Image (cartoon, rainbow, N blue to C red; front, side, top):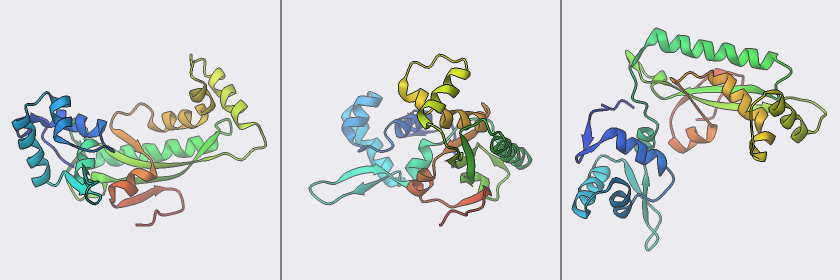
Length: 216
């Protein structure tokens, strides 16, 4: 989804709206929410809400009297937008190629607790266009085979990292997080997602690493 970072909708900057949608991706979008989060008057919130509906950014969900407005596929896409300098097709292809190479390296490293099973590209990467905002990829990881205490191995990996990790949950899930971080490699233009994100957005995807295509 291409959005002008300097653009506005009902007088509200698109970056502000992107942040709002990202924060409330799975919540009811109400006029009261707009007033509270964006410091709008009620008439301003009414105008913005009407623009959301007119631009199909929100859709009604449920049956009376329990209806609510939630983000549409288009609204969810806006929530994932990154306002950065566009990449060319060769640049995004290199980014994807390097990502696949890192997945191969991860899978060859027996010390890591997870392997990369599948990578599914989606979003602008699949479209025939000249420039791109970022590379959206859904990741499927799977536990590496081994007869060991999973919680202890995760905590051992966390301790070996030399990082201060006070949270017990973060320590026992360290192996999963570690592989995602290695895969991303601090590349700001790579946005990693779960398979559930693709299903929620209802968008097309393409398998770029792995052996099992995602059912469309």
